[in-house]
Amino acid sequence: MRIILLGAPGSGKGTQAQRLVERYGIPQVSTGDLLRAAVARGSELGLKAKAAMDAGGLVDDSLVLGLIRERLAAADARAGFILDGFPRNLAQARSLDALLQDLGQPLDAVVQLEVDSAELVRRISGRRSCGDCGRVFNLFTAPPPGGAAAICPSTGAPHRLIQRPDDNEATVAERLRVYQEKTAPLIDFYRSRGILRSIDALGELDEVTRRLVQALPPVAQAPAAAARKAPKAKRASRRPPARPARRRRPAARAARRGTARRKKTPARAVRKQRVSGPRPGKSRARRRTRRRAASR
Ligand code: AMP
Image 1 (cartoon, protein in one colour):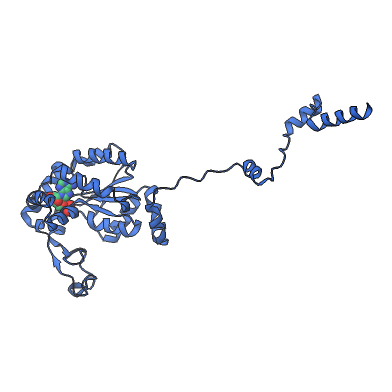
Image 2: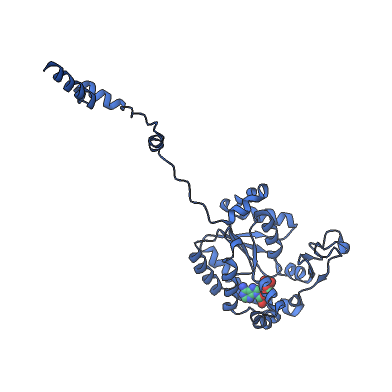
């Protein structure tokens, strides 16, 4: 399954993507996460991206495309992926098309998460993540289970909740503006291709996940049960798709085993033989030769 989650900052793409990861066993590919990791590492790419990120603008397409190309070529993305935060503009969408065509992996669906702007701001201001395990929470809509005392699986101590530096009020306003100007045109882009689905992303998390899963085409829904029921299937699904087994013709199989039976004469041919008389077969000719030899 290859899908894009499309939506404004704060629409819940990251949270819902994590749920799809659990459900389908395919990776979430978030360009925001990849860029933040590059910034944290202090890599050259991270240094180039940081200024745009801090200002709430878009990072240069060539940098983002480089990250995506590398990520989608990784083995775990062979069975599919959930794109979160990419593409962010038409140029990126066209480059993605070309890349997926090269990889022979067309998109299954693009799901737009619809949330009104007042709720977006509320959600972004409540967003926190654990500085140790990286889990994302929301103080208003999805607090850590058990509250402030909830334990981080990485440290065994309570989660260390931090706010993203670009989740401040001024940057959020700019990110929402950039979304309207650069990213929202992708809605029409994918609608015109017939792969866009829109869901109401307001409400309980579980309910939104249910709507999201329902919006996915059946081809994308199918691996869900397999991923849940048979964890081994996940590993298998990372292998290149197996070629469909070639069906051997029964006659060829029998011939190989040496158990080939003579072909039955079709009914029509039998009727024809009765009318016009059978053509002498090999055994009849052999019998005739033997009779002639005996009479000589
Ligand atoms: P996100 O976590 O998706 O909200 O992204 C955080 C920031 O990373 C954005 O405000 C952008 O500065 C940058 N960013 C993430 N994805 C992209 C992208 N596809 N193209 C350009 N910039 C991006």
